[in-house]
Image 1 (cartoon, helix red, strand yellow):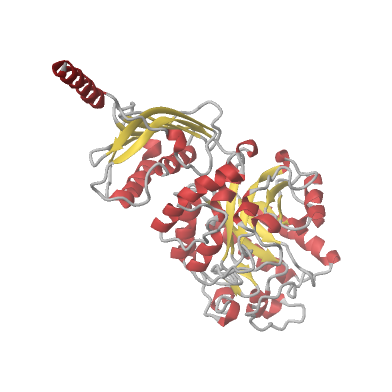
Image 2 (image 1 turned 90 degrees about the vertical axis):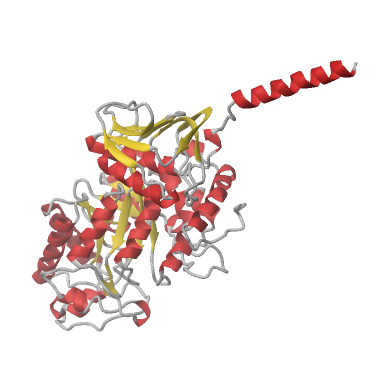
Length: 511
C-alpha cells in the first residue's frame, strides 16, 4: 500500500514538474494602466522580453522615431538598442514602420502589436509612430536596474484620438521659465500624447520673445516679472531650440502675443505705441485689463506686422495666437476694427488666427479659431461665423486653479478644480450649441501669476494633465472617473520616478 501511495505521489510530482517546465505564465496587456485609454486592447497572454541584445528596426521615414525610442530605453534601464534600417519586417526585435492606408487610424493613430519575439509599431505617418512609442513606454517602469528583466505583456492595441488638437498652455510672461524648464514641460505633454504647446509670450509684466526689429521689447520690456524678479526672454536661437525639441516629440508650438490689452511691457518699451506718446512704467502686479495699444495709430500696425512677421518665420506651425482677451479699456468701437486688421496681418504672413473668445465680436477671417475660456455668447458668435473652437473652460481646464482651499499654489477666481472635476466633463456637450463638429480640440492653460519655479508648475499640472490628455484622446463613452482614478493611481509611481512634485489628491488611491 505504501509503495502504491509513493508511486502515485511520484507520478503527480513528475506531472507538476513537467507542467511547470512547459506552461508559460500568461500576462494580460489589458491590465496595464494606459493613459490616455486606448480605443481597443486585445491581450494574447504571453510576454516579450526586452534585453541588451534587442534591436530597433526602422524604415528611412521612421529613423528619428527609432532613435527617440532607443534614447528613452537607455534612460529607463541603461539599455540603448541599436537602430538599424531595413526594407522588410524582421523576425525579432522592435519594428517601427509607416504603412499608409492603415484602416481608420487617421493622422495620429497607430497599431501596436506585441508578440513573443517581435514588437511592431505601424501608423500612417511619423506622428502615429510617436504615439505608439509613448504607449509602448507605458508598459515599462520609468526607471529600472540594467540587470532587471523587462517583460512586456503581448497583445494588440489599435488606437486613434478623438480630437486632433490636444494641448496645454504655459504662461512665461507673468513669470519667466528658461529653455530647460520649457523642454521638461514639453516632455510631460509628449508622454501623454498631447500635440500642442501654446506659449503665452507677452503680457503686462514681461515680453519674452526677441523681436530684432523692436529690440527694446526684450532688453527693457523683458527685464521684470510678477513680484519684481529679473524676468528674461528667448533669443531667436533659443526659441528655435524649443520649437525643434517640440517637433521631435510631435508637438506644435503656438506663439501668443496678446493684443490690444495685456500690453504694458510693450507700452513701457516704446512710447510711440501709447496714444499720448509717453511710455508707461514697467508693471509687476497681477491686475488685468488696464492696458491697451493705441488702435488708431499707424505705428501700432507697423509694430504688429513686424512682430507677426518675425514670429511666423520662427514658427513652422500653422497658427499665431493674437490674444484679444480682457481689453477692458479698449472701447468696442476701437476693438473690433483693431482685431479685424490684426487678423489680416496674421493671414498675410501665411498663418491661421487663434484668439480668446472675445475676438468673435469682430468679423472673423476664414479658418479662424476661437478659444473658449469664459464667455458662451462670444464663442457661439464665433461658431455662427464658421470658426472652430478650442475648449478651455476656466471652470474645468485652467491648471492654475487651486485644487481646494488648502492648495499651496494657484488661484480660485474661476473655481476650485479637484482632479475629478478636471476629468469629468465632455467638450462636445459642455456648451449648448457647440458640438463636436465645431470643436478643434482641448487645451489646458497654466497661467503663472503664482508660479515661479518648476516645482510649482508640477504641483498644479500633476495629476490633472493626464486627465486632460485623456479627454482629448479617448472617446467620452469609454471614460468614467471611477475606473480612471485606478489607472491614475498607478501613474503615481511614474511621477515619483520622474521626480515630479505632484499633488497627492485624496480622491485617488495612490499605490
